Image (cartoon, rainbow, N blue to C red):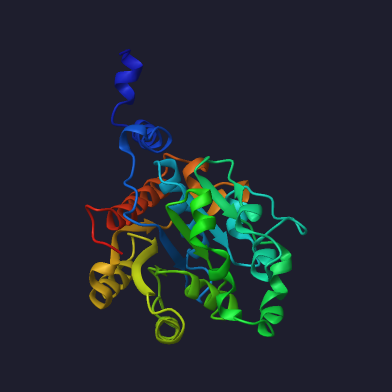
Length: 299
């Protein structure tokens, strides 16, 4: 070790390099595969809570650590597709054609440039009118479920499916809830964090009673945590008091790097793997993986 190396030990730069190495070279630190495939809908009708950000970064965290993962981009804005760097120009085989039954799941899937184990069904602008078209279709609430057959998912070899919903409680979100076994709800550590959450939980309950009895809220993820404010701690305590062990221990900090990454067509794990935001998502992904494995609580 040179004197300059010794001088860097314990510095912020050195600590960031160590964190980056944990993300980029995870072979010795792989995550457990689930005892059975998990299909998780990420939902919150409030915008700006970190829903898409959490979807793509949790998926990337699992994929980079040996767990094959598929993201279904069900938001017409296509932000998840952008972050995973997959083609979502109009005319590309996408979730829109999948819902209409015009293409199969295998035909619509693309592989992210960020990992061979990270797959995505993109959303194109065509999806913007899908809710109107679905209204007149038979089994309109189950179109996505019908496309995500066990055979199709087996062909892709995926362990996890994350469905990123639009910020609404419309027919696309209902399709996501019917297709999934679990719901993950991101909640931001800010004022009015729980506003509207009761309506979301009521809708989940309705879907559970009438369309999908196996559905449950399995995970709540606290996002945009700012340790400099009392409010963040108050929201965190309130959410944990209401929901208990459903809330992940890991909290995602407010981070410029997390916000910047999608603008470069990347998740934060590839954009800045040494950042605290990246490591927080890796830790959250590990919690999700351990809860679904034989050594964690079963979903």
